[in-house]
Image (cartoon, rainbow, N blue to C red; front, side):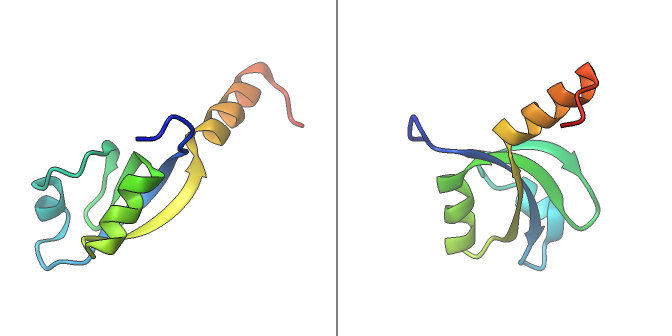
Length: 82
């Protein structure tokens, strides 16, 4: 992973017939945050997400960068609304 590469929180929806269990069985190199019946929520580098798309292992929906997520959670915990 590049030094300045962004890390994303993303939803991965399997494109194979094996679904989420088949996706989890692969060495994806992502940090799984949530497991749902039809998708995963993960943290992963942009290059890793692009590789998953290129290999057609999953549909990738980039939700927010981890940097923005941390900022939002910090603002929430300190009561800052803007």
